[in-house]
Image (cartoon, rainbow, N blue to C red; front, side, top):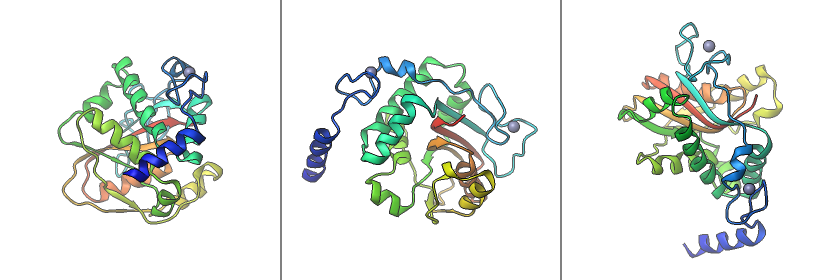
Length: 237
Ligand SMILES: [Zn+2]
Ligand SMILES: [Zn+2]
């Protein structure tokens, strides 16, 4: 406890909490600057083509694939800056701030998010996340997707359940082509929980090609989960 307080103080001195957009103090992103983050156009999690509510198209392969996908912002500008800053400087408050702004985005875009929230608030739905490999988590000090998931869940009185474990220490997906991404994530996850989870919202920090989230979904569905929606903070376009 003392150690974490000290660490917090230390980080505050090294990386004072100022808005990455305008320099105003207290948060890493102030409310006004959230206006500079661009909203994501939703797409089908299987074919990546536009779908107004983020649902999987009826004609797109259902087996072992996600049933929906929503993201808050495009991975560019301030959203990208914040993600990288959190990653490289181990700033745990950034995924928390983004989770809060994400909930605000849902509130302000009720219609667009209606299919997702219908699923999220269903009592059968639990919240989980795409885990980092243990080694990466130790190196960074925390798992940003888990932190975002936990923060979001706390705000809506739900709990986060760890369902997956990353077995392979996969390379960063951003520098790989489609084929390499698929091979990189193939069988990278194992199922760690078997208490009959039926519906899952799976939180991840960024959707790039979707290879990772799709692989996680496959693992979940092979282990009895019936429906999976993916929620990512950002999405590359
Ligand atoms: Zn600002
Ligand atoms: Zn589709």
